[in-house]
Amino acid sequence: PSAVAEAEARARDAVLTKPPGALGRLEELAVWYAGWRDDPRPRIELPQVLVFAGNHGVAARGVSAFPAEVTGQMVANFRAGGAAINQLAEMAGARLDVHALSLDRPTADFTQGPAMSEAEMVEAFRTGWSAVRPESDLLVAGEMGIGNTTSAAAIASALLGGDDWAGAGTGVDAAGLARKRETIAAGLAANPARSGLEVLAALGGRELAAMAGAIAAARMHRIPVVLDGFICSAAALTLWAERRDALDHAVAGHLSAEGAHGRMLEAMGKRPLLDLGLRLGEGSGAALALQILRGAVECHSGMATFAEAGVSDG
Amino acid sequence: PSAVAEAEARARDAVLTKPPGALGRLEELAVWYAGWRDDPRPRIELPQVLVFAGNHGVAARGVSAFPAEVTGQMVANFRAGGAAINQLAEMAGARLDVHALSLDRPTADFTQGPAMSEAEMVEAFRTGWSAVRPESDLLVAGEMGIGNTTSAAAIASALLGGDDWAGAGTGVDAAGLARKRETIAAGLAANPARSGLEVLAALGGRELAAMAGAIAAARMHRIPVVLDGFICSAAALTLWAERRDALDHAVAGHLSAEGAHGRMLEAMGKRPLLDLGLRLGEGSGAALALQILRGAVECHSGMATFAEAGVSDG
Image (tube, each protein chain N blue to C red):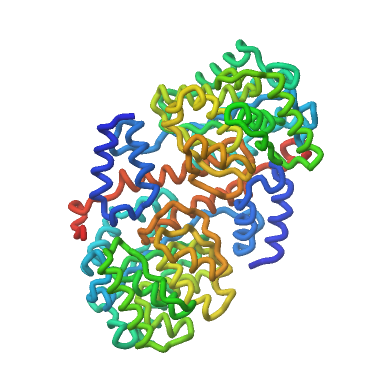
């Protein structure tokens, strides 16, 4: 980010017509956004929402409340405009691009070895990387993939330790949750991979690799990112495991109801903007949080200063 | 609210293309909004933001970090489009109406007796009542008034008990905070009023009475309300003290950084939508929270059902 733009934005914030600090987190968000955009008075005009879909070998192990064909059915729903993310992206005036990643070729069952070869992982990562439009000024990366909370929990376990990362996902019952825990344990045993990207290939899925690629590309283009829930955060975690500053251009959009999400964000030093009990994925929580970030930027860039407005500054 | 519209909205929510409950609080918000609008598939198309400004006799006691003339200066800023609420209302596509209430005639110093006569209170209440456009489909009531956190804290103390309702307001120092506490204690001693509207007249201000009037009018018109921070909530509290169901059409927009706000919301049984450390007033937190409510309604009314989208429902 640009230290100059940040400093200029901070100086501007100090003379806007409000008591110092009265806009709370909105003030720090605006300064952060200004730094990444290298613009002390920015706007959010071209936000982009990417939704990646992938199928998972482990879905066959009964780890989800929904059958695997729902991934493809939901892609059709995204394309027809019927999903939650369609409504939220439209409300935000965001471009929405949907990428279905080889849905007829699920990843391998990671209890038996890596979910993806290195080549498969890189292919999906590149799809995500290329999906980011360089002219975008904000990115939300979302996903759809039956079985992918199992994959995300396995990634968290591999990179952060502990064996209590599994949650209810889309609403699995107690027996399903037990199968999920066994699947994750078996996946960790079968995949001794340890670097972030090795773990992404071994325990991830194509949509997670694509999200990681998109988040990395956004950094190169200086496009701030709003992270979504548990699965998006797990994808981001693989980048963070490689480099601790890899997510400096990202803010956590919301705290998911998927139980372990809070701990994952905490590990990465991210404080969520919203806490509304969402657990849908698709980028939905991030698209909603985009409005908070936009509110911050609009106040920062649109408000009058004390001098301009002729208001006494205390 | 309409029980029929609520039931129809709940039935619709159950068949939308998402796992049950996956939109968390957005789902209950949409059902609540549908009930008040008597429409199982509503939209938010005509939101209205009202900002009321008033001056306070107690401002002369040094309870604020800003001089009293800032109230009028900020009204000019609202009219010129330079304040935070202007940016947030515009972003929400909301109509913004600003009402300056006899700024050249501050309320009486309530340490010496009632801030307003009954007639003065009723006049301000009526201004708020009449400011609500019947065709609005959402209302935010905000305020500006140097000294009004002192008034709001005194109201809370009178209606909820306890003497620890004073906070930093716009950023008063320790000596100012001590003066604020003394002023509130003196106000309570000088005004034995006990009903909600008696307290509103005795310890409130014109902008608080106007907000109470607007919130009451919104209920009559079945217009859902998003409450703002500490001062707006204190105005609402005077209605709640009269009738426990007086705020059923209102949701708490955010938790203010003004320390005692959380306890006030808790007393009224309201859980805030946002917690971003705002403490500006003007309706700013509520205008931002409006986007969350709109997101809820957009998802609810815009999403496809499982049957429409051909998605397996688990």
